Length: 335
Image (cartoon, rainbow, N blue to C red; front, side):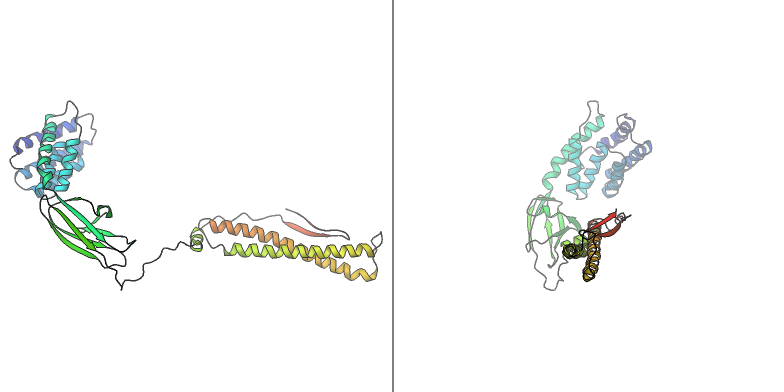
């Protein structure tokens, strides 16, 4: 890395970043551009002095404020020198693949060529880690590498990894954690196998409630009140029909006992009284059935609605009265 012409690269940085700042195609904030230029110069100066750790911090801040191939290439070189080969080579890949306009500044063209040379040298140095885990069926794995979370998609695949010592930890609910420390040399491919054993002392895994009752509760409430209301409605309907049948029977008996002017003998008074009572029972039964039906529908809708549903509109103007005659039975009203 030191054999490259860092002095000429340092001289090109101010010109290149200045070109970016004044290019009409890149309308970055002027203050950010100026700050990125200053940080880039400081970073390259530190890198040339062999202080890549301090240089990387300056160059990374410059890249966040204003991207330039020159700054990115120098930052990648420092990352590689610090052992972060994966991050550095990925940054170099982006520089190499970045399209440059035909009239690109010569410093940008030189940075892209330099990035390709750096990439050719660094790629063979990257190590490869193959991680496999044996675990109980349906175990949900949590993987960390050097205390950083890693996806379980890396299992049984070639994971590009920086050379060095890496701590790998795999956990799963109800299992004992498994850990291993792997030492990877430059360019080495290493396979690491871990096994998760069931922990008999682990508490039972909490179950996610999915039954209909809990789902109904989450949606807004239980359906039990609606079921009760429908039951009351059914009972009321049964009582109304039964009363209507009895009144109809009494009415037929009275038709035979009374004359054409509906004058009935004293012996029929008991039947007349019973007919009126059963007519009242029938009317109350039908009214109860209707009210229960309306309440049941409203409660059912409320159970399926969000936790704070708007109250159903009240039923207004309901007036019902029985209509009992010698040969007829009915209910009339206004809704």
